[in-house]
Image 1 (cartoon, rainbow, N blue to C red):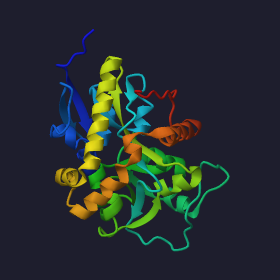
Image 2: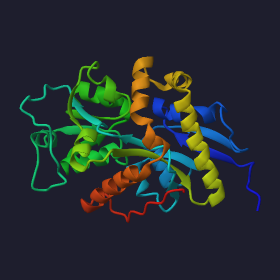
Image 3: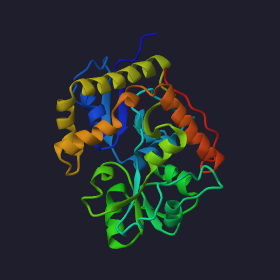
Image 4: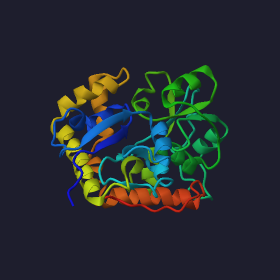
Length: 299
């Protein structure tokens, strides 16, 4: 049977520098798209997670947390991962953080809590969405805590105004929080690495399971080639990404892209796959995820 080369696929991703970098070659026709066409839908990650739960997009960026709830509809592409290897989402506050705070420990061990965790449990924390991996990581660190959902690009303002005591920061805020007048309380990627020895799995790309396997393989290869092209033509891809950098300089944009477009992005590998299994298994064990977890990768 001949593959459908006329199919137009919807492709959802965030309007952020790292995603723009990954999909630069596809958006600008820098690689062979094998006759397929792609409609890029740029939306924040919480919206993409919700759309994935409804199965609306053919291909989409998604939080690893959310994948547990859409595994019946989508398979994970083996490329396109966003992993924080010793760094990740951070919790910030405008309040001076007590210098006596330790470097944190693990609520994976129910017998052990930290002064940082104790402090944060007394706070109301702004989070960027209940389906984000950042939120799940904070749940694993703290257990139960009081929070409000705030769009990710409004969290600094929520903390500054006093509406909340602290904010869970994703995207470029991980690099700009200090110049914006905030102080870091904990880096969840650093904590996770110390606890597990693994990178913190934050985001990935998924493809709908109702697409024929041969076409899914094609789509996976196109995404991988787009990532490879960006890495091979880094300066051009970074310049393309500046339009989504939200007032970051070229240097800072390049640094942010380097954090989240790397060898794990080209392919999860065994380490990346182990990180996802550990992350979701811990969440299931702690009952922060209440559905069976069935990982499926496009091979």
